[in-house]
View: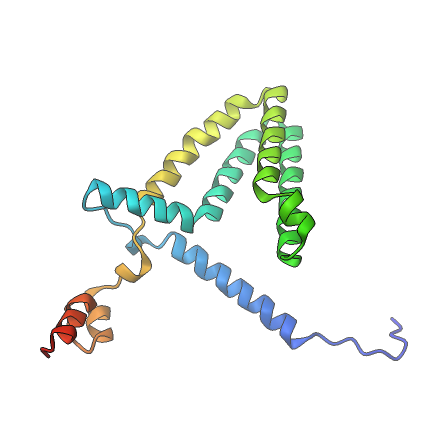
Length: 191
């Protein structure tokens, strides 16, 4: 292969960025389903707060789970619908990439608002599911996926509250009391 005098080099920054992206994805997936991160909420108000916080934090994970369940339910009999949904997801990813690449674009922010484009995409997808007769598969996928998402959102505990007693004691100088009690002691002047 002729390079015509040019030397092809990999940029260290590009390789490092890709490596960091893989690491962060791996950490996010590990954080999403860590077994020690699950516990029953103490009361109904805590359950509601935890569910809302987790729905915000993991919304991309939840959407991906529901999307994969829908595609899996369509696979055996509705391959054309599945391909249409995959194409629609590619268009949504392209729109998201354009928003990220051009954050100050008036065209993308004002004219093609994120909510309007999401509503339009959902309308087209729902119409396509109805026209192809794939609503039973959609309802099956949502019937399986939504309870899973709600259970995860309800029982998933924040990462900073999942430390074991030994880690907490080691991180706080051997004192197993919560940090909030220590802060109160410092504010009151006792040591």
